[in-house]
Length: 636
Image (tube, rainbow, N blue to C red; front, top):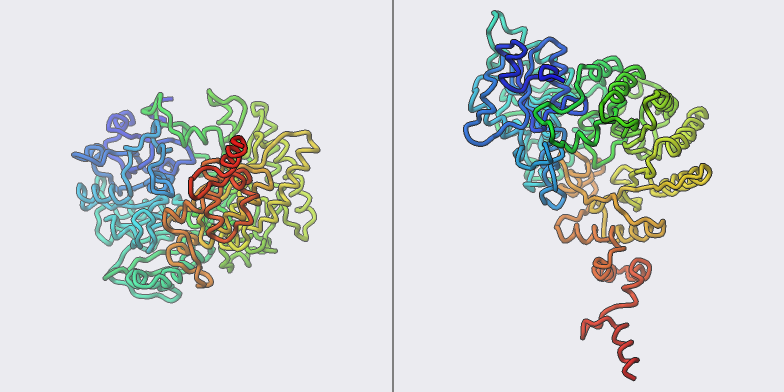
């Protein structure tokens, strides 16, 4: 591996390529890992394949004299800002607003290599240093802050991020198509060799799909959806909820409408997204010449996120689950684009050649493990559909749920002699497995897939995400009834029994989701205890920009029905719910008993806290009553 195998990151690396200037410089808040799972690498390699000279500056120092922002000089076309694979605040803080133990996208997990809101910080520095160079924002941080949004860490509504980050354009969602179109359009404006693009409005196009810009000269066009202004949303939470339904629907339509929102004297314009990529286009993105490893500057250092995916392969893009708390559909869209079998096998063959590969693929999946090859049977119906989920509140009868194509991928990969086993680490939608359609071939393939998954692709523990046990909470989450988890557990246990396997089902659950009460959590604790689970994979709901759950949590309204929804908001309320996950811990039992009495569910004390129910303290002496009785008996 040589330095020239990577996109250049320093002046020295430019010289090794014989470059005196570059067309585009990308500033990334993540470490530079040249891998198709890392956004900056994807955009850099995509632009390179289109004929542009691209450099990446990973995790620049934003203190002092800004030398990292100066070191490569001025690009010929524009600066791009890629703030990271995760939202910077989710990456940095827990739901309790505590600092996480490590930054998964930094060498050795260091916390001091990225600022909060790097999109804003980097933009402000670049605008100060290069006032006339176009700045383009991308990545999940800008994508999900493209309109008025609730910021949990500042506990307030914030306008489109362009109001705080002095940039010229946002590319939202998966950016391969719009970034190349933008580069081509800007390059076409250069008439003489050696000339550079400036920030004049004539050179920054505003008609590219999947882009966002600010204008002080907005004239409504036919078909535009004009949202409530930012100022109206500040005054009226119901207006913010009403806005969000339009935002989500248009994010997930094949033929969306343009959105417009006034912010002070300006208007934010969100151009409709590109249609979903084709298989050939997605293959082309994954077939770019990635080294699949971190840049050589990180030799000897551990990048936690890379360690998780180094031996994994992504097989599709998009997710039609529409879970209310998830940002995948807002960023990738609900329509599934699959890679071809040839492209997948090509990448697997690269993985098996890695020096540290021991025969085990850690994941052969995607945003959801088992949506590969699924689509609407009637494409014209999909073109008109506004539903944010194809499987909630029920599975769309137009959806082809056949797992046969996915089984073919699994078997083709497992047939490679270097692969001992391919695990499925992505989340499995068991509602798709249990669904019974009119297509008997699809039903047969679902059962065949379930058996193959459980017998050949589980490392002893299969993780699934029922998320809750209460049907009214699950409805708000856009997840299936917990009765389906019982059905899947019976299927899982039966197959394990028939195959002589000792494997576990590991469920994920969320507390403090909008609509969830302490009583709901008490029921969750009881039901999961009866199933003999001591829960490990749990989390407290974190409001993140541009999800239905966040808008419901902040506004107090369901954006689709505008009915009021109560949420746990204070740290005390959230902890009161979270404690029920840990009914089996002695230190939690007294608090849980007190909570059950307070909410009128003392009937559950004997089931959740049997030991504590028989060892309650005397309110006068604070001694355990059973111990007092024993001492008195001994005295007599």
